[in-house]
Image (cartoon, rainbow over all chains, first blue to last red; front, side, top):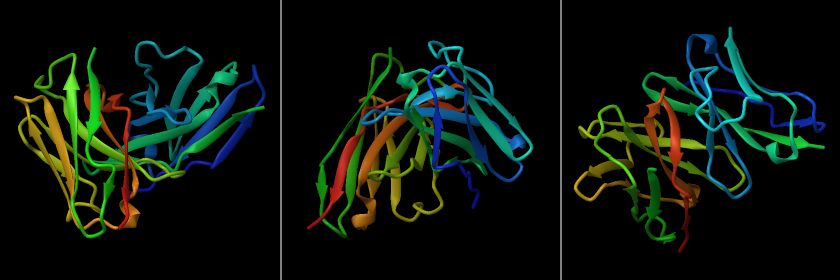
Length: 106
Length: 120
């Protein structure tokens, strides 16, 4: 079965840029989606089709995908961005989620 | 705007069947291209796809759950449901319903989640 691998944790200072990676075999040939989940809340779609933002998502969130790795980048990270982040892709008509990355804003 | 709300028992005994319903409000359930999905999350762990259903009734399941999961839809009630049979403690999780198909193939609307505990 297809697997997506994320680092368990990433730390960033306020105002700096955070990068969260998601790795999978030939992931660049698939679309990647990113979700933010704050403590005790439901996931929120941040990025779809690798780079696109749903309406209402701040411009500081961006995505890229190439080769075996997709990356979520948060520019000018704010304290409110502290959350768990999950990547997601489609494989053989089914949905696969990554293991999640906890972003800490120090 | 569309909202989703999960409902169902919070406690299920081992070996029994877990049954949950997701009610869609504030918009259409029947627009072509939408699919209605169940995702679960054990405490402190990652999201796990359970399956999805289209208005046509077509379904898709996580291969690891396909033998135990059944998703159905009732458009007249604007609801879709999950049944998971032969549950064990490993099925204890928060269960979310979500909508796909509006924003690429991402899940743009989620319910608040309902916690289900499997215990005798």
